[in-house]
Length: 338
Image (cartoon, rainbow, N blue to C red; front, top):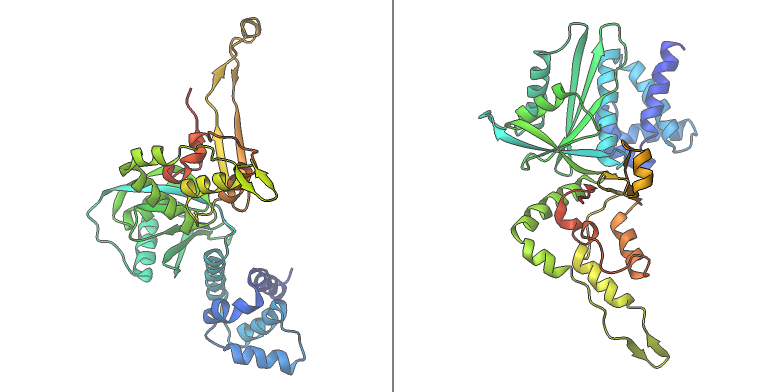
């Protein structure tokens, strides 16, 4: 594939991740050589449809005419990938808590934090690679992109991170991010230790809400236990008959457990304890075998899904604590104990 076709392919691929109405605010600021009015006028002049692909063609011509070099273009496309991740909830984020002050001053500004992370990684990088770091802030969240680039231009996928500078938590878009990256970011946050937490999801605001609720729950544990006790109400008598479904009472109970507008989770994983086979005859034949049981709830909104199951009587009272106390656990990957 020619260099020109490769460049066009890369531009189209990243722009397709944005809706047309997002291009003006999200994409065009990365290309100060032009304006949205100029792009629109070019589409009209060429009698083209207002689509993302057509905008990509206009931008490609502007890139060529402006003599934007490959290194600069790569950095801009890297920033667009980061902007895409910040605006669209496509990534699963894995949670870490940070602790242990290292007495290093907190890097408040985006550019300052980005530069500090890059400097720490440059000191420890491999000879055959160089590191590229980018950072943006969107809706109060700092997003980081860290990528190693080999000297032979070999591609190594970027690692993405997110953090709230006023919170002791760090989020990674990979389940097992390189320790080197986690160390560098943790140190720049002003800490020297990090620990994985069994909390994951696509909505960062919901994850941080759950972590805050966990802190509140630790202070009010007795209130949580009392608040999640379910009791059937008296049947509702109407002119049309008697309602025994308890649907209203169940709805009130779930609102008491989860709140009116609960955080959004897309998964709840429950692992049972490892158990030996209880039947003596079978156990004598399978002496070293362990039974592992687990189940997983998946939905665009697990809380609403669980609420509906309970209201319709599919989930029965009393709800297990891993559901009724979910808001106070700060986790959605749970292992039950015997």
